Length: 112
Image (cartoon, rainbow, N blue to C red; front, side):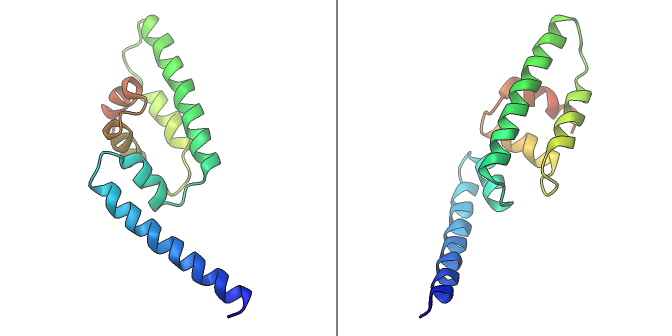
């Protein structure tokens, strides 16, 4: 077996294992990780997402302190920054399920 065939075989095995992990995650409360795996999101994209969520969480806290009660613009900002293959509704639900940035996603859930 040549090097190319071996590489293809290893990629196929990784894809199979990834599908199995996705199925395992469906039966747990790691929905966000499942969405990341199923959509092939990179580590850097996840890091960017976390940084954005931290920034939006701070904005929301500041806005609440100023008396804001509507946070739909934060949902729009988050949605615009997501990789194209991710749906905002799925991300909000998955983050709530996994308790990620809970105050932020509890607010954003009202708008999806």
